[in-house]
Image 1 (spheres, rainbow over the protein chains, first blue to last red):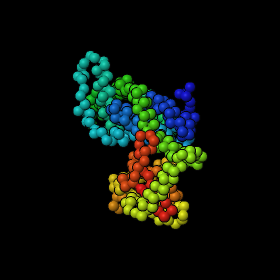
Image 2: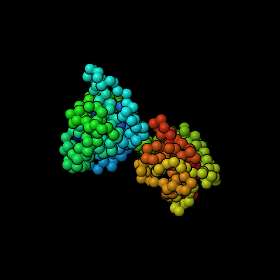
Image 3: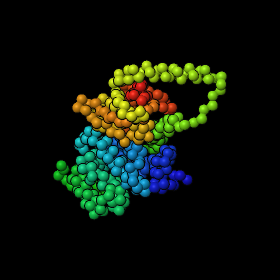
Image 4: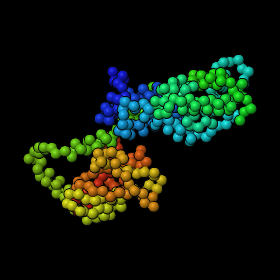
Amino acid sequence: MSKDLPDGEVVPRVLAGDPELYRVLVERYRRDFGRIAEALVGDPDAAADALQEAFIRAFRSLDSCRDPDRFRPWFYRIVANQCHDQRRRRPAVPIEDVEVAAKETADAAVQDDELAGRLEQALERLTPEQREAFVMKEVEGRSYAEMAGLLDMSADALKMRVHRARETLKELLGDLR
Amino acid sequence: MSDHILKDDDLDRAAAALKRKLRGPDASFDDRVMARVRAEAQPARAKRGLLRLLEPRQVRVSPAWLPLAAAALFAVWFAGTRFGARRLEAPAIAATAPRSDTVYVRFELRAPGARAVHLAGDFTEWRPDSIALTRDPDGSWSVTLPLVVGQHAYQFVVDGERWVTDPHAGTVDDGFGGRNSVIVVGPKGVVRS
């Protein structure tokens, strides 16, 4: 099945004139990076636009992916840049302006929505690098080893980045206690 | 900034809530991307189609068609001489002729807001980034390059992503629902654009 082909085989075949095989990568990384794009951009529709643009940019410059076996980190860089650009185009919303349900509500689902909504807004206050590291680690639950491979950084540096992101968020969201 | 500091547990709870909220695009996303991928792949396929047209091939002509074929050849020759007389009128393209089979052709596009402009055509095998144009102070972009005598299809690529036909040149159907700009280069310069 072509959907099981590794990236290292798909990329050369697409470059050799089989654009339809690009669907394998689209399906694979829509699932892999779709949610992270949504967390980075903060809006589902804008995130989908950013991800789509990232796929097209990657397709156009596929011949510059020198190591097809490492398509994933190469493509992730394109996705992250596209998400940062998309986010810059959206006006920041002050955390205080986010409509939230009353804290005393007993409805756990509403409380979750409130928590998630306020965290999304607080993420906008982080640097792009901190936001990316926090989302990967704490929202997506990726390991530091995997993050190090994707971001081309040491695990120790990423731990520090996540720690600083957490400290900033804890201050920003202090009123949630 | 708040006077309070959120507990680690509460931040973890917020992160878990955000994770549950995130969905990512649905499967219809794949079709939308692939539709664009196919559109992007068209210039490459058009290139291959054009190259096939330019390949030498054997043509069999019925004797009954010979008078018509001769008339058509004369019409093409006559049109070529007519256009050749005003070849430098084309505003986007000028030419000099250092050799009989290669002519220097100047391509120009006015695009003051562009960050980069490239030229792609059958002469670059439709690679969108191999020939960069230089920006003039007035916002025009230009490049001069040698082209062999014959017909050439091309487009400008603005900012690496927008394919633009030359507003001062004729166009031909690319065979995939789009248009390519076209010039005809003769031994003494651009015959038709």
